[in-house]
Amino acid sequence: MKKEMSYIDSIHRSGRIWNLSVMVILLLFPVAVSLIFGAVPDMHGLIMGLIATAPMYWAVGVIETFTFIPMLGAGGSYLSFVTGNISNLKLPCAINALEQAGVKANSDEGEVVSTIAIATSSIVTTLIIVVGVLLIVPLSPLLESPVLAPAFAQMLPALFGGLGVVFISRNWKIAIAPVILMLVLFICVPALDSGTVGIMVPVSVLFTLAVSRIMYKKKMLD
View (cartoon, rainbow, N blue to C red):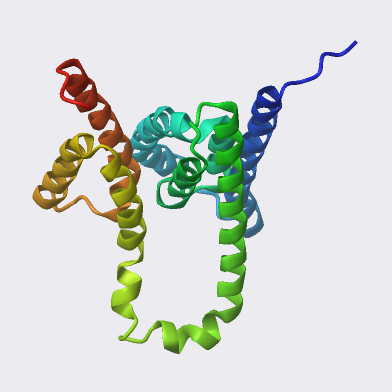
């Protein structure tokens, strides 16, 4: 008699299938463009470009894997890495859902809550994109209005500010070190901007874990 697959095993099976499928589809697009338009890239230039850029993305990929999975759970991680935009959207949605439900990401309940939150976020995002594509032309004069420009510029700070207040208030002592670190880095290193979020979030997480461990050992935490 065939043993019934557990929920977590089915998550891993489906996650591997979808992640590998998406990877193949993404790689097939440039191949299809090259074949259709006869624009085969110069292999020497391609290899040199990969040597210059790929190691950074490999490092970020490894760091993000070890950073995000404990916070998102298995199902949420698979779904997030397929749909993308983790640090800006999927992670805040999952963390907020776990907080509201009062469960941990590594528990069975947290696994379900995180996956549902990320799936809902992905569906809502897709619907908003569809609506945006349909309405972009008639709404362009309104969206490009100088009156609304300051509001659009503050959308992400407002989102993370709201989430930050909730989590910082839970244990403000732990939040001091990473906040100071990020302020110093972004002020002293002008090259750091919104494009470096994928690198800076894991760096901040690892730094926070190290400082929290030291504070815990010194009995500085309540």
